[in-house]
Image 1: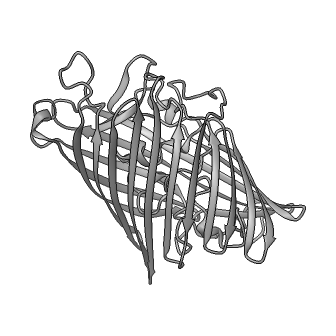
Image 2: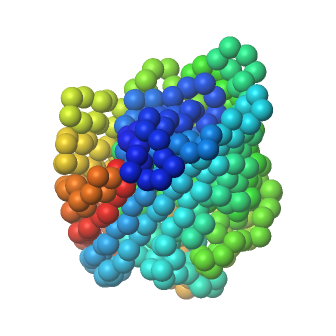
Image 3: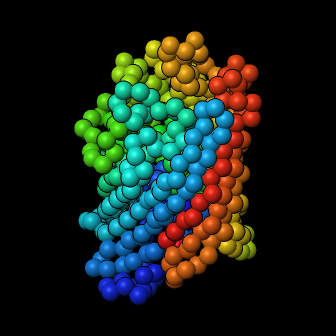
Length: 405
């Protein structure tokens, strides 16, 4: 997980110093592992708790944010809410290979099924009848319950099998909340449903092969996005498929390209399937006292029947000691911003968003930091929809964060 260091839980019973997990998919540094089976640069820093007990090694990472969200303009809204994530991983030798167990939970459902205000965001539903527009849906209580088994098959090579319910298929870059370049931003990208919206999938099986800096993998998974009942499990299906090629040519670089067929992703338009293509590059630059990471990503959704829509994301974060400055620029084509009977319903509009934020982390315990931060967002919309959004729609999110480090 981005942001983790290999500190040990030496003050906890049964824990030993120096615990260190191996790469979950093969013979490489664990720093390369991100969300699901996605890769990030090997030089990405990590901060969290590691432990060793009874032949198992593991890691714990998590955060909880308290956020005041104000989105301006005629379609804006305000809300105070909390978002959170707790991830626990454990690893053990199993025969000739390695077994890794992954769990990720969130109390996001407590914010309510309508999520939080976020101008220009689209996707999913709060009530099973109307789409969420200008709002970000909450994540499910169970975001990942998965196991990975990797088996050496030659010098520097391995084969692996990943099974999750829920889990994340081989499609897109690492999920936004796990990228160092984006994890300090409390708001989801408006390109989320073009790049990494399949990161909570109720039913996924991925098989792949790793050889040195290369990884090739394929998934069968449930294409339907989670429904509005965020506390439970959705029915498992394997009705969609994807493939991804990843390449980490040097410690500071990670590239991926992926393709997926997603069966009936949206609950409210069950007759629409989607084909998705993504490509991304992440560059990470460690330096004395800090780290700088940047991600550039492109995604294309091809709806059948429907439109072909593109999205672009550029995000970056630089950390120096207790200070982190982050930014995000996005440009995306959307056809879900208006509902019938509006004459704008179904029309494609290219919209953009620019975000800049800062967080100051204050240590409050050996493995816990209190972050004080804020972000501001400017939205750019075409003239045809300025009457709905205003000439200069903008948002602001001050927040307080507790983070395991």
